[in-house]
Image (spheres, rainbow, N blue to C red):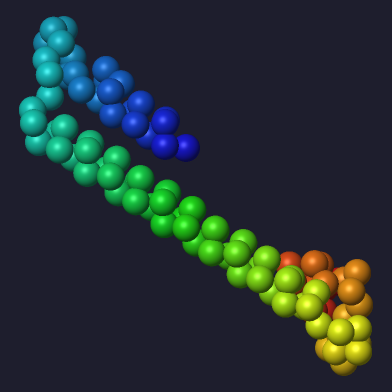
Amino acid sequence: MIKPKLQNLVVSSNLVSHQFNEPQFLPEAGNTDLLARAIHDLRHYLVASLRKQAFKAETRNAIEHLHSLTDEHLRDIGITRMDISRAVRLGRGNF
């Protein structure tokens, strides 16, 4: 995901203007905008990755907690030991 974004920074069409049928490098401001956009996209990707990782950890912790309960407690909740993973991932009414 990061590699294509960084590769887009150095694509010749992003760095060179073809006005007057002669290649001209874009001014510094254009490069700054490209770099700012790349940093913004990278930050967005990292935040999304961290959220996904936190969600997976929370799900794993919930599954481990439910596995630590006794069968009687699980019966009180309304799930069986076999349904723990589905109940955590899909919600109680969807399994």
